[in-house]
Amino acid sequence: MSDPKRLVVNLFEMNTPGHITHGLWRLPGNNRERYTDIRYWTELARLAEAAGVDAIFIADVIGGYDVYKSSLEPALREGLQIPNNDPMLVVPAMAAVTEHVGFGVTFSTSYEPPFAFARRMSTLDHLTRGRIGWNIVTSYLPSAARNFGLDAEIPHDTRYEIADEYVDVLYKLWEGSWDDDAVLVDRERGVYTDPFKVRPIDHVGTHFKVAGPHLSEPSPQRTPLLFQASASKAGIAFAAKHAEVLFTADRPPGALDRNMATLRDAAVAEGRRADDLRFLVMATVITAPTDDEVADKLARYRAKASAEGAFIHMSVPFNPLEHPETITVREALEREDRHDVIAAGGLPLHLTVGQFIRAADQSWDSRFFAVGRPEEVADTIESWLDDDGIDGINLRQYHSFETIRDFGELVVPVLRRRGRMREAYVPGETLRERIFGAGARLPERHPAARYRGGRNL
Ligand SMILES: Cc1cc2nc3c(=O)[nH]c(=O)nc-3n(C[C@H](O)[C@H](O)[C@H](O)COP(=O)(O)O)c2cc1C
Image (cartoon, rainbow, N blue to C red; front, side, top):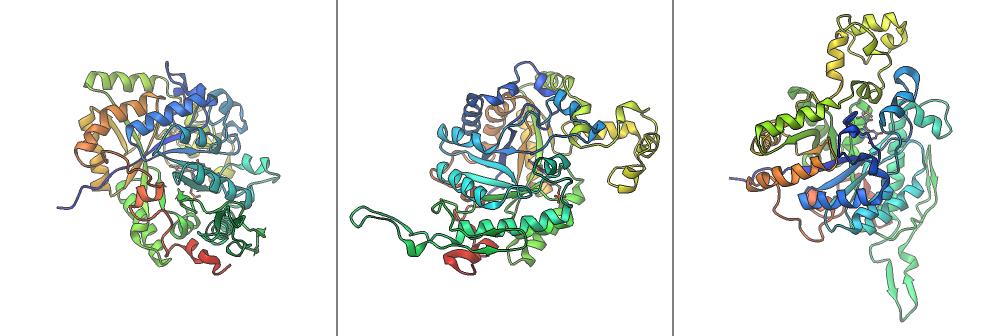
């Protein structure tokens, strides 16, 4: 019999008080307001490593949520992803107090050119000794565009065209610009770097012009582990070509299978292998030793949930809470004279406002929602791996640090007994090796590899 499938676990974070569990920063004992304190991050990193999770994953946005009620005020009041600090800068602090846990950081390809970002990621790959990953996003907030000198958002598919060239520049810098043996540190001859083993990239494309060479010497993984979450046709085409770990939001069972199959088929059409992709779902685990304690904890969390937070986060372009629950979303939009929103599509117009409100916040209503005693929660997680075919989870935090403590102390021991998590980290392993079990670098069949040794530059 083959070994049971191992669970990949990312602890889902953001450098902000309110990420995806809306309103819960108000819970007594929740540390969210300490996100500005470096000790918040070092404590979190130690707890995540003690729990044996694969990586701490830090989301990011570069604008405020101001579509709901056409204002930033609700987001500011709710602490919803604003205030919001830089995700990359907390990584070295966490890396300094840990040995193994990985880090994923989110960065957008739409607004800052690639050269400086390439160096920042190489720096992080060096400082973490190969424990860094990058969540490639193209940024969905109109406010982000206005923060970077544009009047309006770049159209969705154009953002992916830009992203495609952006990562191409990065691959040239990360994979092609320096040979592995370029750095000599030869004290006798006085040669630090062999100049014949470093080359410019001279990239001239539609969106970017970058001379190079890369400023950083080769880091353990060179290209960080590549994460992405796509839903659209353009996003899926991009992910199939580039991404290694895919995040997916909640989907009904058939749709999740189809989404994973579509992505794997598209990756194979790009010359990659179906198992070059791993799929993680956003998941909830709320647990305690007894049923009563579980019920108490769930009630305690739910009592602080904010429905409005979900509307702000989803950029809902009308005010559901101001309409009777029995009318449809279409009728509510008509009452607000939002015929533009009706025409644009994208909202479930046929639902009643009541149904819409209840479905809005996935932190309370999702297929990947495990609430129970540790053994029950472990059963549910095992069914996600075996029946749904996913590879791992992005663990939603309801309470910092209760969520990671509960997971580490109560659920991980059960998952370890069942062979679903490893007993210990492998010393010196990079994040890519941990997730794929192969080398620290991208495989030869990935498009980044074509630039190795300065080929195809
Ligand atoms: C689990 C998950 C996490 C995400 N994290 C971020 C994030 O931190 N920042 C961001 O701008 N977008 C984030 N996104 C949005 C995706 O990058 C993407 O825009 C979205 O899935 C829609 O796909 P599309 O770009 O193909 O239309 C996330 C999506 C999912 C499902």
